[in-house]
Image (cartoon, rainbow, N blue to C red; front, side):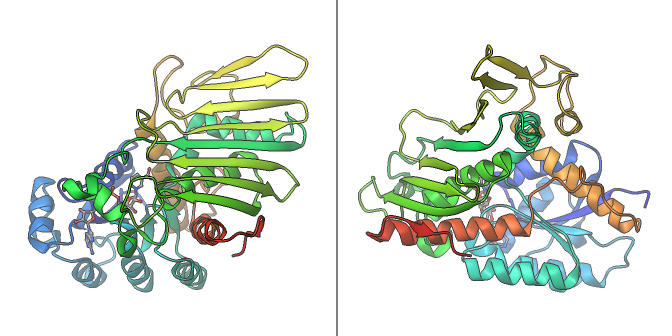
Length: 385
Ligand SMILES: NC(=O)c1ccc[n+]([C@@H]2O[C@H](COP(=O)([O-])OP(=O)(O)OC[C@H]3O[C@@H](n4cnc5c(N)ncnc54)[C@H](O)[C@@H]3O)[C@@H](O)[C@H]2O)c1
């Protein structure tokens, strides 16, 4: 196949947040082109948004149903290859299922759906159709997160004993949902966000990062969820004790009322021989501490990094890479996988290094288990899927 991979977008119209980030990320490597969209829940706004992006008039759709139906009828060399879904959580499942049922691959933002049951239905459909579903857990796309994961995998730290992950944000410290802030309005509304607020929105990122770097799976939890801003129906803060499948323990803290914090995701992983520490707001440095040797600083762009870190880096050392490039790594790996499949080849493990439907199911299980644990007096809860 010697052309770009064709993307259609659902959501991400004017004034939306993450859709624009997806478009930038999809564009960075020149592998993907946006050919159509149904960019808003309001058909008029959808069309206006598509005009601003110079979408062809006949592929600037009013609804996602129309988009999937009409794209399915186009010749194979013209129609989109995949759909990116960047709507609020309640509007993930229906377009994702419709896309898969009509033969389109899917990129979807986290959490994958509104409920665990929906996530499992998507997993079944992906398995049945053989199509690819990519889930944009952004933080696993950073080069030094790849480095951290590889060092743990190679046994550099010995057996992992403890994982501390914290994700404090401050942007929901005030009830901005009552002052017309659209992003906070749907995130604090259970019918649109799901059964959790903060833990669903950012706790899932923290849990995915902890499992991705450590290579472990959460098996038990003990959660304390809080509603700090009066009148909110969903948690805006919480703390979770964790047990992992190798016996390691951990703590996950997520908060959206941590006044003054921006997006301060941090992780520390402790093994028998040493530990690592990575901060999302300082993503080009990985701190590695040894029990019996001086601390080291690994830096993005350096030749000493593992092949997986180098494969996911673009700029020379000292030239900062960040959020958009990490996002682009997920798109690039997904696009390489699709291209390889479309050419009848088998994608390499490096290409397949992006989150998918299994991570989606685990993310929804995390939400449902954490909420159940938070409501219960029982100390430890088995992590059920
Ligand atoms: N990966 C990340 O780091 C990250 C960051 C932010 C948000 N997100 C996720 O992205 C999703 C969107 O969040 P956001 O903050 O961009 O929301 P947003 O409110 O800014 O934008 C949502 C967009 O979806 C559109 N929409 C809603 N229903 C639709 C439908 N049926 N058809 C077409 N368009 C529809 C809205 O009109 C709007 O354009 C959420 O699931 C959120 O959890 C992920």
